Image 1 (tube, rainbow, N blue to C red):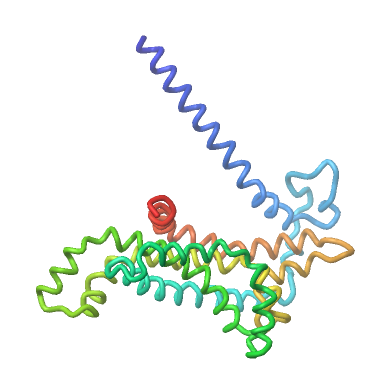
Image 2: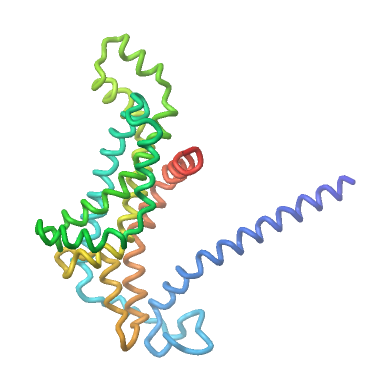
Length: 276
């Protein structure tokens, strides 16, 4: 009987590991394929049967020209959106969580902003931006990306702030602290992990946006890396090697940031998405 239980336990563990391995293989295969294609010479890009490993590896695909201005634009826009959205989200979420300004209806309205398809605002935004001279500028991209980033940030921060006992605020008031001092010395330090989650998630979301960057920019002065990747796809052919190499360069910053702040990401997704 004991042997049967042990055997069953080992079998279930093996099935669990096999399922996890299968899921990881499915989700990580695109990243693996981009990586090996970046090191393939042109003669191996479209071979049949496909090469699952570069037979003649090369680094010539990484000689992508003109990528630095686009990398700079992505870093400036994504970092700005992440930091500004975190600050706005914290203050707005504090007002909703502690003083019930707008109630749950206002919080629900904020999150509904994320459900708006970008294509529905692309053309009106283009017309407005043309009138106020915001086309092809960092400021124009930052402003439009702040809308979904702040909506998501507020939703996440409300969950974090609701977890902080109100008795801490009341204790600070009893000690003579003002509302601003309470926010600065009590609430803000306890919200650091939530703010980190908002910053990372906003950065990743902004970094990968393509549609609005394509519509609202037209050259390297403000275009971001996702738009730059589109240059390798033409009506005549697709340069798979340089496209994959540039894709690897594009993926690295979000991956590095995600690994560094992964514990905040997990906490942010848990509080924001599950507890809502």
